[in-house]
Length: 429
Image (cartoon, rainbow, N blue to C red):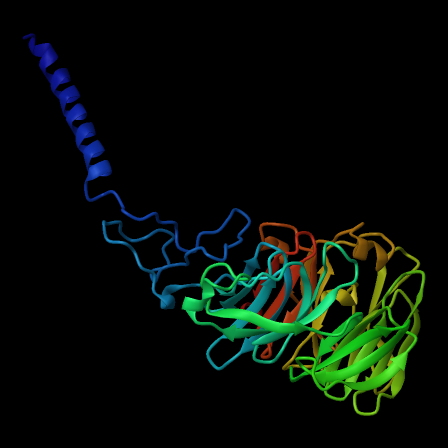
């Protein structure tokens, strides 16, 4: 053989053998992982961490330190939870949170089917508590320990909602298969009963042990207070008002606000839960919407103005005085703190959007891209909590805001798709 060909042939042979060895090693050898792995702490291009994604490992590396045939198990202590999380990508029919010494949990209802879910905010695992079929649940309030709720269901055949009480009852797994209203085995099933017909508004007491209902009785609004399950009803008052929003802000005060419209004067009243006596707090104010602090000392009020925008202010009940909230947003996009009752958190549009407020926002004619702001009504101090659009994978128009009992987490829904989110407030401190 020509000596000039020996070296090239040898090199080619070595390359072929190396390629075969690499192919065998990768597909059959120890280098092929037997489990699918994603980078712990994996995020989308916009920085959004999916609820069920893994989190950073102990070394802080963006990739696992080694791959082997041994399945990888991530211990709870290694899990880093995203500051902003989408808890549910499907519409929810109300939610509530509870905080213990160890963790905060949140429970919610799937709006379409009625499944009840639970998430510990220190975890990434969503638990299905009940599969009882309870479709078209649009809103709900919960008792303090999150074992029962009162909610409104809209039937496909009628426009008037049905209001019901439902309790999570532990079930025997062997009996689950015989439950016609349940699919699969879950630790609980829903048991309860329908409440009065023609309930137009309801609210849970601050302790979660009582229920206020406003019932349309022959065109008049009649207010009742009962046990949380609707039993032992006691009539509190009668009023010509029916189109109202209600909050049970503190033990002795129910806040009743006429539903806001730019073309109508709005009013806020406080009703004493012991005497049924009404006291006018605000009004007449065009397009009025309100959120009252949990000690009833302050009211965040929004109203329509002549500039195709909205005005927002803090009203101090004791002095009867207003102070500017600095930002402009609807009261429907705000929530007062439970632990720090002087603090109010609001979803505020990043840029002004012209429209007829609050009507265009209610009907979906306009939508906003929000930031979260915190305002201390006592001191006037204001802080930007988060530009949530930078942490999410979508545009968020936040509403139905609530905080857990210790003000550690802010929860809200996205009006654009009715998804359900949490924000860890400790990350902004």
